[in-house]
Length: 249
Image (cartoon, rainbow, N blue to C red; front, side):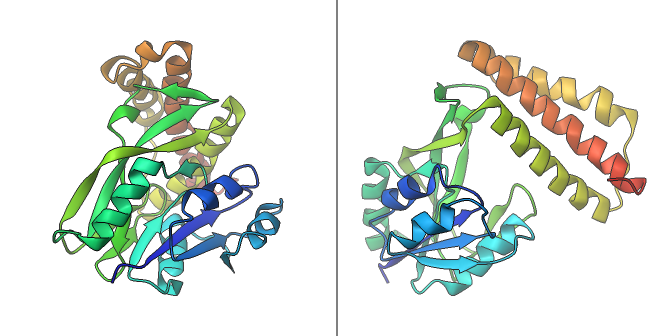
């Protein structure tokens, strides 16, 4: 019951994939589930003794749940390609797999980097995700910011992994556009409408929360860019929803 399958979902992650795989080299099985990358992601992964699954992307939860169903081992460690398991977290993973103390999964906190700069505030200082879990007790739900549904207790790691989430401002904007499209499609499926409140109040409110309440101003200009882009993400979500509701692309 102590063996681990590490799963890395990918789409055009040639910049990250080699380091991501190396950071989970402690796992007994590594699966790369790729959404038909057009760069060298798969080519690089093929040289690193991992299992590669190609699957058309529909949503984040379905992609990860499918990969979990293909895993051979009871413990799953999910790693986004832009994340790195640090050595202290690796030690915690191996120890807790041996002695889970009744937990079916574990939260890990992340240290964020934007364009190579460590972000200490903006709300990201409180970020946590479930990354290690027993597959028989856990399942992903949600379309965009997927979460783990569990039928047991979750523990916490003491140390953090590194998250190189946005390598440049353009990359950050591209991700916000992608998430905005997926979120808009989800809202449309629920029959949601767009009102002035969504485009005039919610984006500035999001900026205020990240920059002032969550102390983004302490991260200097990078903190301003994070807060601004988070606000943009809210705005683009509702613009895309309005377009979908009116039959436009």
